Image 1 (tube, rainbow, N blue to C red):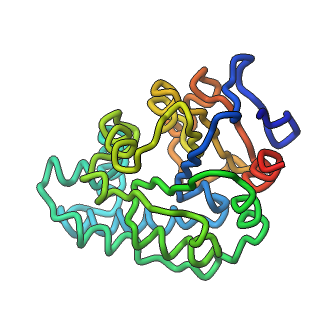
Image 2: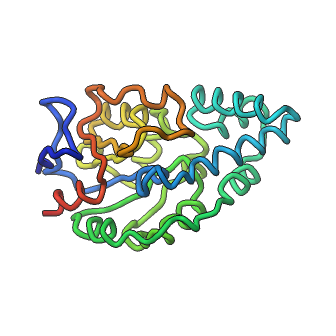
Image 3: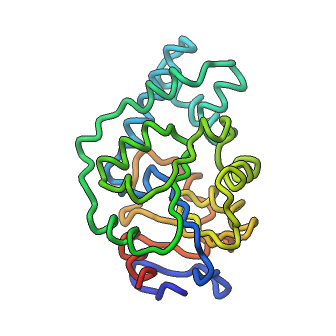
Length: 241
């Protein structure tokens, strides 16, 4: 099963993996199951900055720079704070995910597209389960996923580390060669592809997302990206057919 190329979807290389044997569908949460233009990540970003500013008694500008440095080096800002400052992750997660979801609306088209996929559907996020449940509930997608693998379930080993993915695969009995991974960050697809998964990168139609760092756009033409789409619901509809 190969999704046809359209203006909103393309394969990155002639050897792109197809979906014929996929029986497990794995989705990132933020900026993947909802459009990045909702900018929930912008809220999370600001709340991380403010938390770090208070925790380390530094200016918001210094906190923002530290936050991004940890994010790039360790996979999440939280992981950096745990390693370098020994913080308790629970208060951090509760604070940064206390965001306003008013702008999120149910997505019946995406819900129907997920319903049309045969197999197991999982959410795999570097965020918290509580945040994922809140977002999925607002989108009307919660009933379509059998489990959420969050940063706590990962024992705080975040994507994109190989250890994190191996923990995920073991926890849910996923055979990587029979699985597909949907992500908004290219670097989070390198290890899944190496392990055998079919990879799909979900990108916003408008690339001008102010909360993104320039390095987050790296790797989009890499061989480990099998497919790229600007329209997740449409992409899944074609697969379901």
